[in-house]
Image 1 (tube, rainbow, N blue to C red):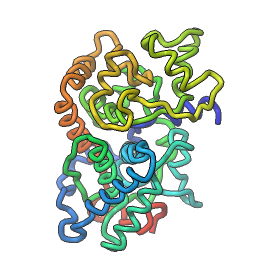
Image 2 (image 1 turned 45 degrees about the vertical axis):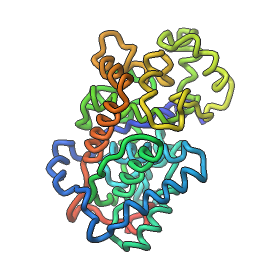
Image 3 (image 1 turned 45 degrees about the horizontal axis):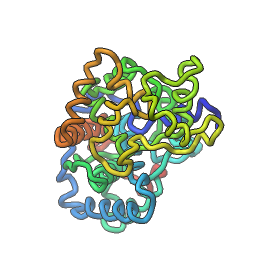
Length: 337
């Protein structure tokens, strides 16, 4: 895999940007159609089915597996909205978002969604969308890892199209400056301070491929030296994980202390100048940034972070939902009906 692809692949734990769908202001007109009680009559056990499978996967495999479900939800919502488009495979008419550079060779968790969909279809045929399954799976992955819980709004329908070009061009990258990150968040209607910092906190149980951080460790901005924002005492540890000529797909923990737990330690890491990606560290190390105060607040209070994260997740889940008669309820998440 080329260095460019490694850079593109590893940077997208949290962030996909809106491309080609409705604006959030448009989607907000549909918000009243999304409700935590949407399946109370038609599929009352759906949340428990999703949680049971996510929990089983958590204990059967590496803990990072379920953090991939949160990433999968983010990548779905920020390309044309929360419509399940990321799950579609290639066909003669569909160019799968799975083949976009930010997803290629790094997208995990699709097989878990397949397993959940099979179980849900058995219990409630042709009733629950893949987009809603993604939203529930992401929420359970956070909660089961020690993070907050929230009432997931449901009622989305699935897209019949994918948007690979949108996925390719509009993703915030691991080397983005704070200004670039803010502009990309604003483009999807998310707040460029509180939502940006809150949702970045999902990196507390995330990983990134070494290919994205190698320049920070050895040749930052072609200067021949490491990134000056990086704590020099942390540099040898990262270099052991990601040697200059090592495997670029090797994963490094974004929270080196509690990598499998959803907590507020990510923000303590930023204050210690140990953020794995440039796009992490700029939240705290950009001089005069209005995000610094939020990082400090979240580092001091896990309760405050959890509350804000849950609110931002709900807001993100409302990006351009297909509801009513739009889209469809896919019987197989990988293909249209």
